[in-house]
Amino acid sequence: MTTDTVVLDHGTGAKLSQRLVQTVVEILDDVYLGEMEDSALLPISGRQIAVTTDSFVADPPFFGNGDIGKIAVCGTVNDLAVVGARPLYLTLAMIIEAGLPMDSLVRVVTSVRDCAREAGVKIVAGDTKVVRKGEADQIYLNTTGIGIVEREPLRMKHVRAGDKVILSGPIGNHTVHLLSIREGLGFEERVLSDCAPLNGMIDGLLDAAPAGAVHSIRDVTRGGLSAVLHEYSTATGLMLRVQEEALPIQHETRMATDMLGINPIHAANEGCLALFVDGSAADDVIALLQKHAYGRNAVVIGDVTDVARRSVEMVEAGGRVHELEELEGAELPRLC
Image 1: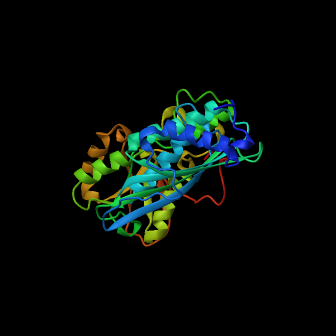
Image 2: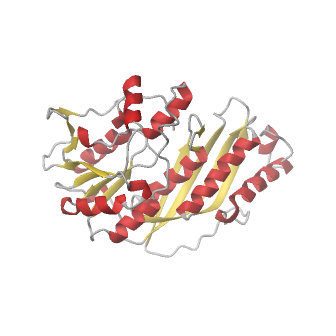
Image 3: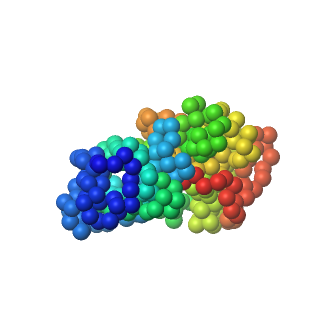
């Protein structure tokens, strides 16, 4: 590259644009399958494919153990994997603010490459646009993911009364990590983001679990666990009951959220799954999850009741029960 920062001329489609694209392609290396044509031709076989798309606007876009590039790949791969699909291909579009240091762009693309390698997916198409300084928050990403469905898809409609609700890991860490960096709270070294590609863990679980044991999976992202629980209660028409003491929350995360006056159950995550599992197979599923690095803290947190009411109950440590209200707006400032 001939400049140390991204400039508007990188978005003209001319020589500097080609240099920018070539830099991205060189960093992506073996995870990039594009042939610089206007469309990619993808050899996909099977009865069904899964497609998802998402845009990523992280604040801050660079944090202690990751960045917006890692979030983009993990978020897209996880959205495919939770429906039972095997992720294969991603697109990568970047809206870059003029003035972004080239070192920062290289960091983002390197994270995309490394996460794509871990997840076993290929980048097949992409796009770059450069906007004037002040028109974007350094860098925005958009990805589309394509996967192949080789097993019975996992859907919310499969959830039924008697299912156990399992979390694959702690909640709130991603939110606390980013907020700590942004607000100078001092928790970021003790509370790391949970951002991770979970398709390997999901694939291994579905291969090894008793047939039909796992009814549905959802990654717990924006809106937090509360949003997921209410979504399932609404879809099934059944009340969900959660044990507050069972919620996996890191001690430092609890300290930070108490200090900030927020509830971790509403906090965003980037590497946590909520699984709805046949009650008789819950112990087997927990054991399988705990064999994987990303699931070692998996725990049952509640169950799907047979009460025909769209609500979520929280059972407190002392036994008192209260209804978990769904947030109307944002309890937290935008993080991702």
